[in-house]
Length: 302
Ligand SMILES: [Zn+2]
Image (cartoon, rainbow, N blue to C red; front, side, top):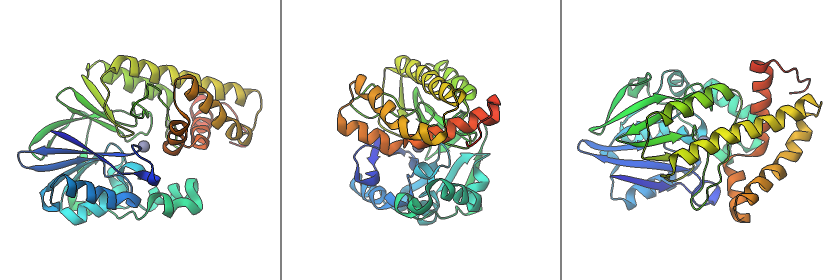
């Protein structure tokens, strides 16, 4: 019942997924990916024999551009309802602030990375609260509020299969290695841990992160997410308390993460792809912002 479309982000295989569910009333997508990969999404749908008129529902785990960038385009193309967390919904209808904040992070690379972002027509937005059951093309799917990566993040539950967005972090097919996307401005260590325990208590049979694929060793995966949350934040906290600058941390973190990946069996091409999904500088800026805002660690330049 679940198909996966590889969006070939930055011409790399198996980096960003869009999941396709065929229901009795139509077709639902979980994530659209960014505007820059919409051609791949459309081609993938065509290959699956799905016409645009059949798409009735688009579920977004959150509104970051790699997940939701093409939602407005797809909503206008198909007339589908876009289901999104109540905190994220206003920014899909009026993306001015969202795009300004992305522009601060990505600068000149904004267009080549993410392509065009169209607003979702307000009347096509369905606002989600924790626990809501969505009628997605006739398939009941439950929204599970899971902050930590962002305050406006939903995981989706379909009969034991959990679409985890970014809350179960990033894992590429063929590897056990997990990498944490901790972008500014909403990375939150404590909330992230609580969200993992919330999902664990539901005992999923399998999880499907947007980056990328599905995995059945759920407990081991969750354990590794928790472990990595501590390892990464402890490393950066130590550096921050020692007075190292964000620039020094950004210079060192790619090597630190690559070593970790290699130790965990990731081949060189894999190390590169993990870095494409989660650029290390974003780990630094997201975690340092959290230290400053939530833990009250004073960082002059962060
Ligand atoms: Zn993501």
